[in-house]
Length: 138
Image 1: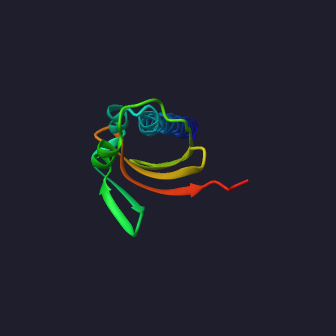
Image 2: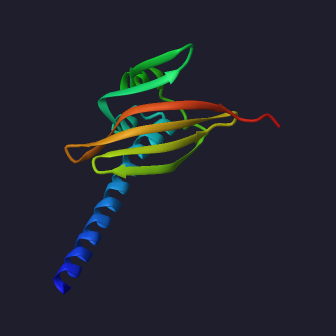
Image 3: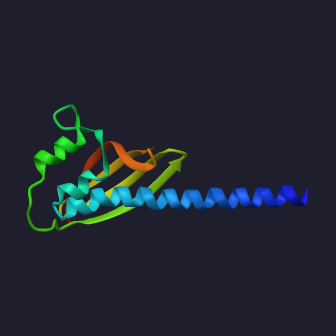
């Protein structure tokens, strides 16, 4: 019984350590996206995405594009963006994860939902959906 309890505790500790490690790696991945966008740094942003990642959104109807190609076309070098970013939630189950992000500008915010997979030991965003939320006028 004593050996079983010791084994159970060691497995619990190992799983907890692995989950914390994965959480930090998921945070690192989504921070590549957030920091790259804030600094208009496409190369940093690109590190967050799998090459076939999709971005799906509503703009004059349903749109679906390759995320990297979308940002490559839209990002222009320039001064740092005036925005606040935060990770509001991360949920991990094995090799799959999701993250909810908020990016706040002066008059609106983006609410981003990222789906990630651990591919060859590395977390990558494989899909993104978002909502552009206008701020209440005061």
